[in-house]
Image: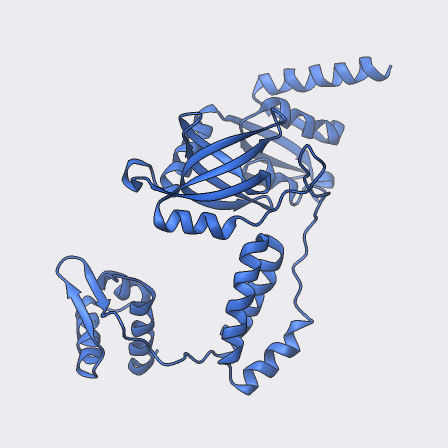
Length: 323
């Protein structure tokens, strides 16, 4: 990247955050801190109002904005792909907001980029399996339109009041929660929040929320862990409870478990002649044994002994049930 392109990219980076550390700029462009200082000085000399806070970073003075940004064909194609993903993996509120944003982006594209996107439009698709929509006890579908509100609550540290339906208890309860983050997993959005009713952190699926509104009250963000910190803690807890499993599959059956093995916690895979040895880390031997039964004598449990016993008991139950 030449220096002019880098200066433009640094300016865009500065406009994207309230404060940007010099080290972050250096890491992004693989340059030294001295080069960062020279580049920032060059922008300042060109009339860009860049301020600096000692020990913190650089910032753009409020009120300054770049003229409309032009996108390359590759960037425009990436945005189109993002739009396709949003159509399948977001809720009604975010789909609408992203669609409005894409309209603004398309409006600043050059004619050639617009033609390029139109030629790609019908040739990019994101598909996913969608089982029947989850319905509440009254037989009505859940609204699935609260993602934008939850994002606002996260940004402003607002308390959320919601009516949440628990599939386990088959009952809806009114909750006041202090959100700490959202994540997407297995085709569902999840909200991690401190529940004032249960006095603990809970994982709420957004597609089980019946009603939601943001309260005027706020909470102290610092008293809660970050989303990343919470997820790492849960992962560590899971690892402490997990079981290390070693199996030997025939190579004949390996082609049937290309994707499945990753869902069950695959850690290592080694081909040994006519067999392949796999190592897994799982939290439930019972759940894992039900998967193994599918492969009959094409798989051998090497360890632990407890898994052999669990699988044998399951086979005995099946035999008794059918014979």
